[in-house]
Length: 184
Image 1 (tube, rainbow, N blue to C red):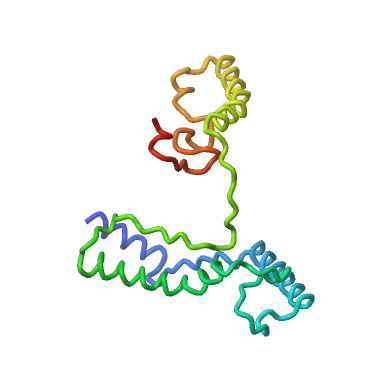
Image 2 (spheres, helix red, strand yellow; image 1 turned 45 degrees about the horizontal axis):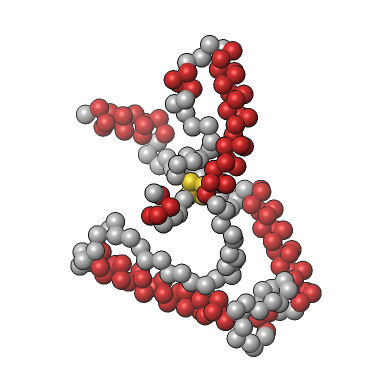
């Protein structure tokens, strides 16, 4: 009864044809300027290096310096659409139609070789933790001094995290991924 009254009041205030027009996220001035900058960069590359769509090679080439990517990266680009469609059809069949799999079942990782396969040397976990504590020691000390000078509640102070990400779940801001032996 109360809900119908609220709806009637809303329609009475705004009219029955009330539709709020929200702007598209790409209509903003900053997005338009960024798009214009990208178009100018693309035009400059096309004018200096030529039209890449006129070449008849089967290689995957970057536009700016015409560097060839590996054949495996090119094959990944060619097969990514068919792989995605096949996985989508399997999902619809197994989860939505026949209910053979649960909706919460893990999704298989494809491990396609793409463009940015840079391997970074993994820092030792202890070194990362020590670096984290060194960075935040000064900030924590200043916050504690402010708390002490204002007679704050110590339990309330330690109730909140002092870093933007929980250190128990992440390392350097990215979610921790490790083997079981690393946890022990």
